[in-house]
Structures are given as C-alpha cells and as structure tokens.
Length: 262
Image 1 (cartoon, helix red, strand yellow):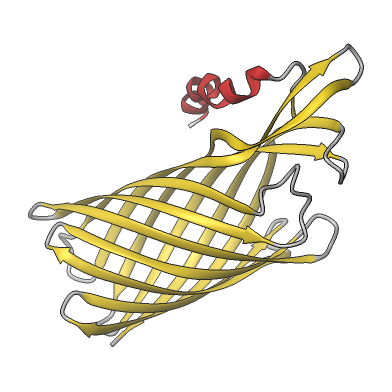
Image 2: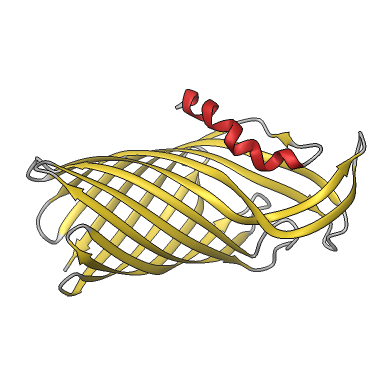
C-alpha cells in the first residue's frame, strides 16, 4: 500500500503545483470502528428500497465522531447492470467540538460479471454534499465527488461470502485561486471559483458476509483509508489567503453490519 501511494503522489500533487507555496501536514493515523444497520425491501422484481444507519468511532474507538441515516432506491436493469440513487443525512463532529450536519445526494451505476464461484463488479458513483455555515472561499458548500469501486466476491460457499474491493474518490469542484508567494506570506490573492479537481481518497476493504437465511445476514470487514484533503484558510471576505495545506491521514477501521431483507 505504501509503495502504491508513493507512485500515486505525483498525480495527487499535480493540482497543487499552480500555487507558489504549498505545505503538507504530517501523516496522521487513527484506529476506529463502524456499526451499521440496513433494511432492504423488495418492491417489485428488480426494484429495491433500502433504509440504513451507521455510527462511527475514532481516537482508538474511544469517541463517537459521526452518525448517519440514509434512504436509497436501486433497480436491476439487467443481470449485469444495476442503477440507483439516494439521500444520506450525516452529522459529523468537527475539530472544535461542534456537530456539523451534511446532506448528501448520490446516483450510481454498477456493472457485474459473474463466473461459477466469483462475482466482479465496478461501481461509479456521483455524489453532492451540501453543508451550511461554511466559509465559501475555503469550502464549497455543494461539494461534488466521483468514486470508483472495483470489487471481487467469492460465492462458492453456502453461507459465507468473502470479498475485497478498492475505491478511489475524485474531488470535482474544490475552491481554487491565483496567488503569489513573496517569501513569507501570500499576496495578490484572487478566488477563481470551484474548479479544482484531484484524487483525495484511496480505500481498501476486505471482509466477509455471513448469510443466515433469506432475511438475515451479517457483515464483518476492515478498512484502510488514505485521505489527502486540500485545507484552505482564508478570511471571511475572501480577500486574503492565510495558508494552503494538504492534510494527510491513514485510518484503519473495523466494521460490523446487520441486514434484514424482506
């Protein structure tokens, strides 16, 4: 994983090269946990509605930092193609100790290829996340991202289904600007809109799903998450750039989920 990230770093850094002075934070690491619940209802052949919720813990699983609830709809167009969309409400704990609500809307399409004992899939998801009360010069209140997930699942067992996938997320419309670095501070700062695009997440997941029967199943998994986020600090008037930093973190999470289908 470290070798892969080293090879990817020049591509990730490319959007930052237009700035005269860009810094990177020290790599932060953490270990957390996720617990989820999902209800899946078959409305008609190929059409499903899902209701799900999840809580997340960080700082070595010692503190709750996020909870979310969502509603989704998916339709199986053919044996190898499925499309869907939905809404997700997210409440996240910020570094200042306050909770910040987010509203996420998404649409996706998933292609599947099946063999005797394996299923391979590729999912492309476009999402928009709305946040209120942000400095619009350093955070897009309507951030868009495109994520690509490639997954392999072994289906040769009766009740167990081991799987693994990798996922890449591309930020599509982060804030951008023109600026000059004069040796000790930024000058000639001009906000140029939301047109900065860069790869800001690489994720790897391995897990196993245990199906008790047609209605009940459990999911156990581990996640490795590498995040590379642009962190812009400006005044509220959008006339002065104080700093531009790329925050780096690698987080490991264990997860448990339960699904009820009916």
